[in-house]
Length: 495
Image (cartoon, rainbow, N blue to C red):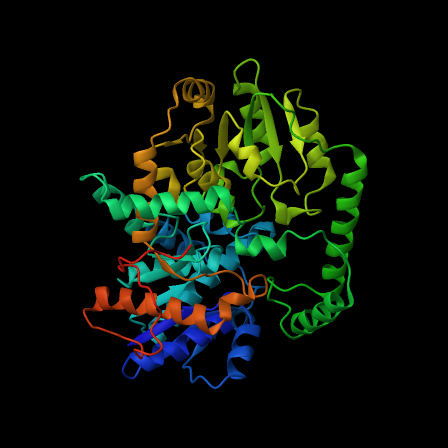
């Protein structure tokens, strides 16, 4: 079996997975696609034998960014790969979308040619990646599907220690959806009810934020360790300046200094408030931006400030709109954006460092694009409006609204008529577990546990089970090393 990994920032994670897969798959071949040189360099420093790793920045240098783009080629690919048109690939990329028109179109042309040529040479049976999150990964997915390949994303279900393996460029988790629909056909068993009730008790009485928030939501500062890391990263930038995912030392330093200044300036500016006891409110959490959550899952809601202005106009009389930034965005957003929000008469701007649990719990309604807060609202049985193409919008008690003009009516109706459906919530929680596996996929620099031996073997076991279902073969790890739990195990799931 030939497996191609899109390395992204997960080269060590995927390298360790490949070592485990080699134990179970007869004569496997591993190839890769990388944005820049850093991933392949790190892989070559390990013992694992890999085939070709195609590097996009090498291709850019060979073909030349200074040449005009081929309009007829792009028009042909627009008909072949459009979603509904290929401009979406550019707008989905936080870096390429900032280029001049000619450079962006040339980048798109070369990216399509690069992926087509790489997949033609490597001829994989399977592609594995993280979530589709940029132009390159978007095109790997679409061109891979055009070639009839399974293209699997390893995605978080926005709960700790659960991994979803899904084949979709957006956020459809077919296994979760299918399990949810099946669970509706019959009453829940005693075991199913107990599993979900135990999970809810654990969640509501011993709440723990997602693993990555523990490291990435810290107050920004400057440290010697950070300076050392900047030097290392900036050396790579010097070696591969076309890799836009890596910044120079000056860019890193300027970004961090601005972040620290913004954070403390915001603290003393009086911009941020706390919830007011007894006040009725709708809660809208801001998304990290630019990020897949808006660029890909809600491309028409990238201007979150404009969306907030529209939500504020849509609220029933007597309600305030509580807005809170993402905790990992401390100091990242320009203060001018907060000042713009502060001027909206019925908006109360909350400090990003405030825990969201009680804010969600006491909200009359929660609205989100695709934030983890949406899952919190579901678990805490609060009315929920979803405006992005995230997996939990398919839960019956979440209302998906894709047109802003519908908001006044939908908000009022949901506040007035919402009644929690405990049985359906228990079904949804069971579906989350039945449609997922033990494991975690987050950036290793934020969650070091990701590359631990235990997690790598959990994720590898999940991949092997999926491979068995798709390719009709049974792949197993050594019995002594087998993870204690698979997605089909009937024993109580670990939380």
